[in-house]
Amino acid sequence: MKSVEQKKRILVTGGAGFLGSHLCERLLTDGHEVICLDNYFTGTKQNILGLLDNPYFELIRHDVTFPLYIEVDEIYNLACPASPIHYQFDPVQTTKTSVHGAINMLGLAKRVKAKIFQASTSEVYGDPQVHPQPESYWGHVNPNGIRSCYDEGKRCAETLFFDYHRQHKLRIKVARIFNTYGPRMHPNDGRVVSNFIVQALLGEPITIYGDGSQTRSFCYVDDLIEAFIRLMATEDDFTGPVNTGNPGEFTILQLAENVLELTGSKSELIFKPLPQDDPRQRRPDITLAKEKLGWEPKISLREGLLPTIAYFDDFLRTQK
Ligand code: NAD
Ligand code: UDP
Ligand code: UDP
Image (cartoon, rainbow, N blue to C red; front, side, top):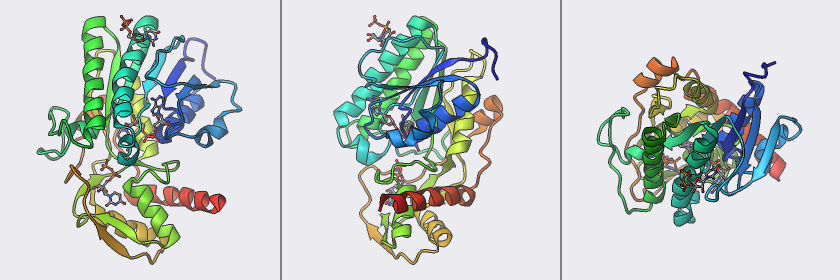
């Protein structure tokens, strides 16, 4: 049990999404009160069904592009579609969510003097020309391509966070999240881990975009949430941005081979065109996270794929 002073009231925007639902669960386990805000664009009530009976959990249907007046101690700002299919569905709304959403949540944090965390992204590095990517790298981003609504929206949100910090002395924490996977990923959002697992379980062809030699570094969700908690608990003079991700780097073909082996699937590999502006390679330099958060991921790709496969297996059975 937390004492009255230790127990915080914490707002999680995008709390019904993949990462948000795991974060809400962790904060409740840690003894806090959680207010989960979501407009259910990509999140679902299903993700937080297990939390609804908890008297310290509260749910608000709200769009972060509109102002919100409540009293909280901390804010985790996660609201934003995260996969290309969803953020490109209504790109103007994606930029609004990142930019107006950040302004509203920063305005709220300023009024109630709350500490505020921003879910930024490795996409601020674009198609990087420095590898692996340290936080000091400014990135290589197309300002007007089909990924720009997400990349530039998140970059502008970072600008706003640092200006509210400098101008209004807000306590901010900015995490640059690299590709993360685990149970409760959206089954149809087109991300590579969910696509490959669902395709393998259904015995459908595994869709490799390009020749599959592009790389990504995949972090299991529990490792990532631990980094969020540690970052929020750092001294006020540490703002980030800090890379949070798993430096283990795999080609997309290697990911496909792992998924096929662990599911025992006989699905064939098929090759499709590479989407526009698809980054060639991505791997976080996590030196700063190790130093400031005392954190590094513990769960290997194969260890993390097992519960993720089990989740989708169960999901597909109960959907039928
Ligand atoms: P997700 O799509 O599962 O979650 C996003 C949540 O935000 C959803 O529940 C959605 O309904 C909600 N949302 C979207 N627009 C909203 C709005 N205008 N108002 C209120 N709620 C809104 O995605 P996720 O993977 O859980 O990502 C969470 C955050 O982490 C996002 O900000 C994303 O950009 C960031 N991120 C995720 C990854 C990853 O690999 N999962 C990588 C980098 C950054
Ligand atoms: N805001 C909010 N909740 C609050 C305080 C502010 O949603 O509790 C929003 C409001 O829409 C405001 C924005 O945050 O426009 C930025 O607030 P800030 O105080 O920085 O600027 P201003 O009020 O001058 O626009
Ligand atoms: N990808 C793929 N097949 C799929 C989905 C994605 O080969 O069915 C590729 C995609 O082109 C990219 C990588 O996998 O190179 C990661 O894609 P994802 O959308 O998961 O994340 P992001 O590109 O945003 O890092």
